[in-house]
Length: 179
Image (tube, rainbow, N blue to C red; front, side, top):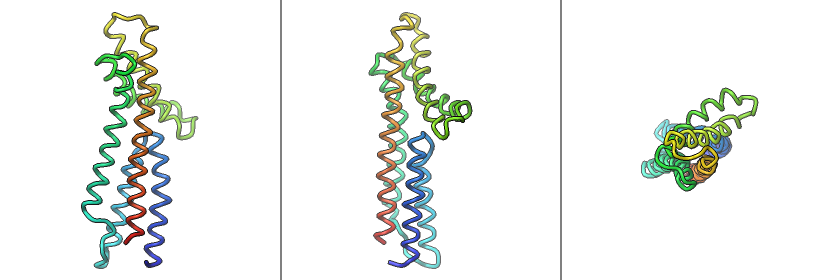
């Protein structure tokens, strides 16, 4: 193991760890870890060196990142469904979460880095609520449970995505050390 490999591994560990924090805040941290792995891969192969990771490893990490995105998106809708929402409420949770994350980043900027997360959770709840209101057959009070469940599902999705990101990060760091 060379000093260069140790430095690259430490950089991957620190920058990848910071990227995990971004994932927790609903930002593309898992994809940044993959980008870091790609940069490290190119670095390791420069000058005729051996690659840090196999193509299979990078492909598997890419698949984990996609699965994390699917889980994060789907769990907001699943939470709304678990709370009694129907189709429009579930879709409202998904769309509201995206819109809320964008608005939260801007309107809740006074909450350092947490505005995006708060916006996503509030957006999921509001989206589920509005989606259910379009049916017109339930009172507003009865829609609080599906809305709260949508926010809880979205938070659970973020935690699951963070778990995928942690797995990606560990493989990237250990793979760099292993070489």
